[in-house]
Length: 319
Ligand code: FES
Image 1 (cartoon, rainbow, N blue to C red):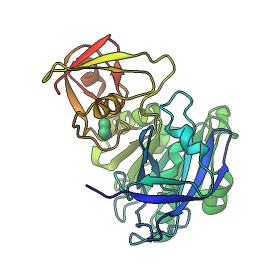
Image 2: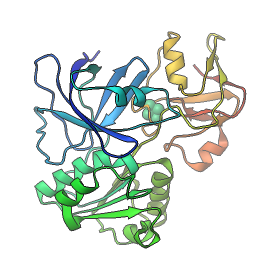
Image 3: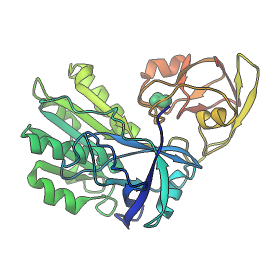
């Protein structure tokens, strides 16, 4: 069992109407553990566990220690309350968290195509900073809905200049041309994409169509773990015990089952690692992960219970 650490808010500011930057320092006097580009911290909140990627413009956080942790948190109006809690934190407030963990590391020494959508830019900033410092070639593309919705625009322009290309959904002349970016990928270039599900799926399918090996495509999903407007409650029955749980809107199957004392295995809780995959005995899943292929989703035999919900009133799961 990893021991939680106490983090204290050192500063907070709004980056856009919906994105709040939080900088933490060690709350208990001990130094903060170091991290590598792409790492995240898991916060242990009353609303459930929430993971946020570390933002590092300086590539200054050596793996053996960091002075501060910086995050940018998007307010999820339909989420389970974790982002609302984070947006309410003020300097001096303390939270519990686990030490940084990296499921989205850079391939050492390999040129990189970095693609970020929305708040998925946070780990990508740290990657770009590390690549620049190492002198490794990279291309950095960052898309947002509008200029006003783009977090860290001025910081990115100052830090990376022409190495960063910005794209805005409401400005067609800036459109992100995934087909061209992937077609131009060098044979040893690795592709990293972080953002909403649609962006990750588009990159994965383009890369597959272009014959880019899957081990050169790395992704991390940024989505509210348990929330979309229009979500309704559904029931989950455990095959082993017959216990039935109700999963309300705004909570994940994992949240509800763990609260009920069920021991589960999971990691990312965002739908991109596949660790929580569970067999479906009965019912129809509403798949929200990026692990399963379209044909696996249509087959309906398994689901990622950290993010996916139900289209039927009840799911019977092999748990
Ligand atoms: S915990 Fe990673 S996909 Fe569910």
